[in-house]
Image 1 (cartoon, rainbow, N blue to C red):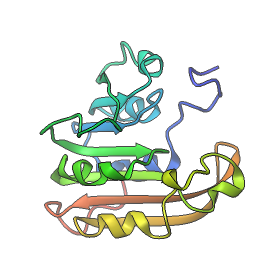
Image 2: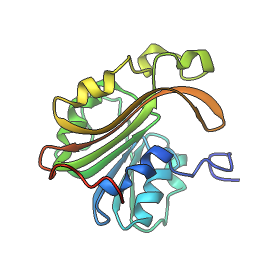
Image 3: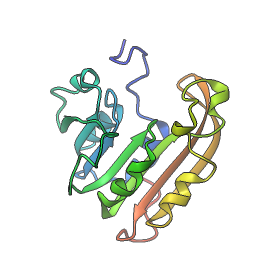
Image 4: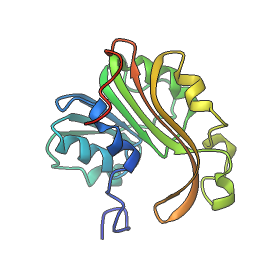
Length: 187
């Protein structure tokens, strides 16, 4: 059994895998609210230098000794962006939403960086947790926030089957304005 208690809990999201080619193999990657680090492990395995951040110290401990992964136990919802002026070639966010982080998150992304984001949306409350509107994106919210600063490569929203249960999600793959256009779509 995996550290998260589910046999598939450490498998990266198919969405993240699909757009991983947007992240250079030697990139500095931020895995935000990483949990047990399924995406940190995935990108480190591809040669990236990953900073895995979460407030759960026990979950972060499962990443100890994983080559290419540095961990930081941080409360992302405390006052202020906890990563100062650090920059990343790619940022990965899965199953996490704290709207006040949108602006500092985008500021931390390199001008030619990639953002891979996937989380729950309104309608998910019909299927269980999360059901609190504070943790559910509104229709088109991700693309609306990101299109002001990034080029959207792909966007999806709607009902899906994830982790053996139905869910309502939004997913985006985007790149910074400094990235050559069009991006290479097949990795």
